[in-house]
Image (tube, rainbow, N blue to C red; front, side, top):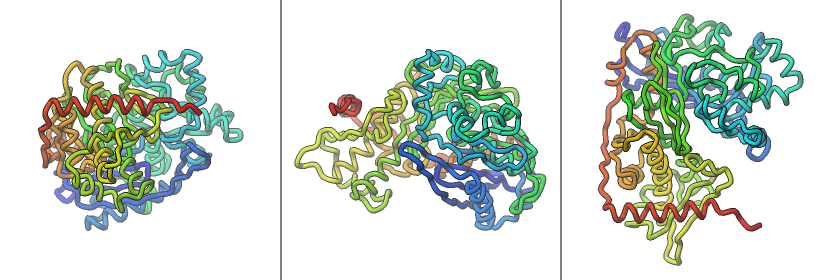
Length: 500
């Protein structure tokens, strides 16, 4: 890297807050700051963010992170950006002002539009070109909604007056004084508009989803200089923005999953498991998604991804919905106070079931309770339910990849829970590797920026990862199969339609 006192700044723009990380050339976190922002729920199932509020949290978190590291802004050698992926924003090209709040990835307002696309037989075209299922999760239908529901927006878009972006695109636009309208391949692969093979916007998909080409950003690699800072109060001009990746891909890179078959799972609000499948896209036959992992130089790496919508959010539900714990970290002690869940199984389908089921009508289920069931049994069964949800993803991945997942690298807040990690190793029969620092997403963005700015290579980036704890499977085959059988029954119950 440059001078020894240079640092890399990672901006991790997440769903509930923005985290800025200041990293040394060796990948050590020198300073960090997280600032939360408001979630807006204008109707049931609708979720929005105020992009100007997000922008303010970026400046504030960067300033605080540099202060906590005791590093002057002039020492920042490169910036990496990682972001909540499918969240969609449209703004005025001249003023940079959004025409509407951002529509968040969790928002279900376009579910009917997605059902209509499926009814007209579009599922195969979308899957074959993008590796995605038609779902309100992705950006494409959100863009059309904004153009159709903001007065005059569609006509302005056709004239080239409006710009669409996921949050990475918006941040680069603002950081560079509107000199760049770009995204990277990982974020573009989550829009339902990019062909996975050509890595370009696809005319047939744009027509199908009614998105004019004029609003779309230029697609770049994940590790290259796409713009430089300009006109900011909190950073000097000229710093290269040299790494961009969606949050889950950044975590895969941050976990140094550089070889085919390497896998990671991020345990956040939901759980996201990705496996590196190498230089060619392979399409899942088991309900998973194919996505771009990253593109460095002329080399593209692909991944298969599975998501369980609820992971850490199930623990929040125990805290806020049931009141059986005061804080999320209390769940482990409560769960450990009993030796087993005594036959209780919790399916945490509190927002429907994601991969590999894709059942948006499924509901959470608690199966096997008796008069002897206590809050401790529920807490333990909830943690087990998170691990069993992830196991479903790993089983599907192994089938798609044609090989078992032997090791799983883990990160995210809930990965700090030893009981959950050991049960994950046991029920999936996989060795779980947990790094010393669980913020793999921000570290991945910094590593990409280091590579993109020519400050380090992949070998040096790999050294930034320090595995601290290994959880080896210890459960007997009989116990494992007993858990899996009970889980299957409980998932069936979660998918039953109510009679009323």
